[in-house]
Amino acid sequence: MEQLIAEVEAYAASVGRTPQAVLRDAIGAGWREWGSWKSRKSSPTMTRVDKLREFMAENPPTEDAA
Image 1 (cartoon, rainbow, N blue to C red):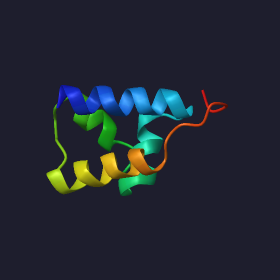
Image 2: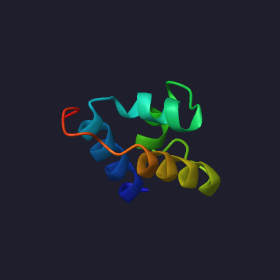
Image 3: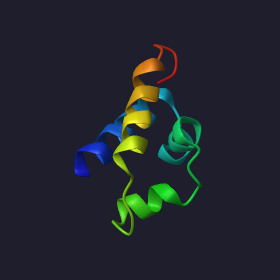
Image 4: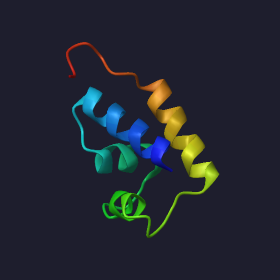
């Protein structure tokens, strides 16, 4: 889980968005889902993780986004 959190935080920073916004765009997550993941109150299914990673791969940061 720590690796996924780090991946999402790095991606969000590189595209100038919050992790919550990335999750919302990628998997339709609610605004509180990120906080639940970070606090370990919940965790995503592998299907959601796969969709999230696919979204990040298909939407790489641009040079002017950071």
